[in-house]
Image (cartoon, rainbow, N blue to C red; front, side, top):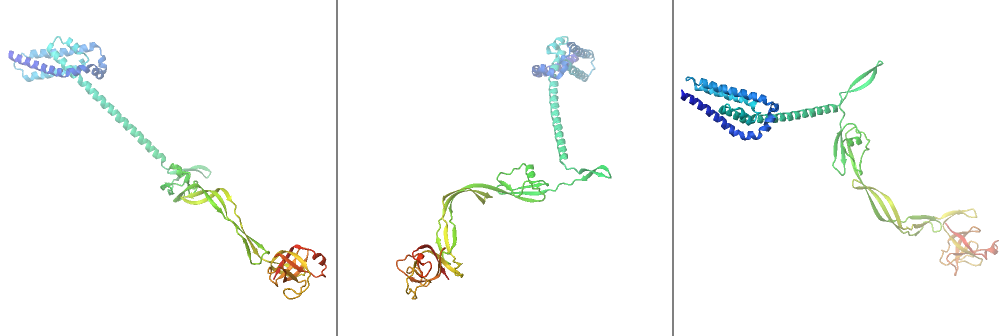
Length: 443
């Protein structure tokens, strides 16, 4: 009998030692974080009055004491199985774990002060409580992390839903209406008419650039300027499209965009002389007398316009003449006609202005007939003998004459007009020299 009781007592002591060993392994970390973990996990339990903790502690002590007494009483029975003893030990453990949640707010010193009545068993339970204090804190910490993660995930889902809803609303707003709403009158009553709306026709527009890459666009019926604004495109200052910006696009179009450039250039240039032709009867008809011309010189500054690299036009900005040109003068003999004092019309090939003197010497001429009022004398070889002339000026008309004689000592532009002593103007003329006498070479 005594041996049985000793064996049971030894089993209880071994069990208590195992619990103490577990407590020693976990006591150090539990003591370091005891205050913080207890405050975070237990919440309002930390602030409970000491009286409540004392009551819970006393109830736990009574339960342990009752279990011990029960063990001692029932230990007198020799026929009790070891298995029943094990069940009681398990019950004691459960009782200790159940009470640990209530007494973990008490410090180890408080627990020790209460357990003086049962040194061995209560010390074992107290140690077990200390070891288990860390577990709820860790569990609550993990739970807190899980809650935070779930909250973040929920927030992300809400934000995603809001973005999706806004996108769908925006798409709905941009969708063309299925009907146009118009107002009208039907038999004197205002009505609203729904007209089906068709998708706007899309046109293909190609911008063919010279100095950059071409652009292809699809657009509805808008102006070229509105199309360029809609894509945020701005033409360069030197670029010009082949159509105006206010042109409405109503069909597929290829619009050429030319590049304009402007440059200045200074050039030394020749001013060519001009030719002046003057008709005259002072030279033989059909002949020409020319006075050569001479080119001038100037410096000219040009503004040159280039389209797509090719010169299109140039404009004179300034011009400075450094040498004036001399024009060519051409005298063209054309002859003429006139009516003589005798009433006849005479045509002539040319005329000359000569100095006239008068003489009345009688006798044969160079041509062999006697001199008379149809004869004139000239310087030798200045005129061909037999040439027909008509002699007059603004005051006297001597009619048709013939070159029939020549005399030395005369000048080339002089003629001697034979005059009869019976001429009424003889006394006046024989002493006169006329410098404005006209002689016409008649046909």
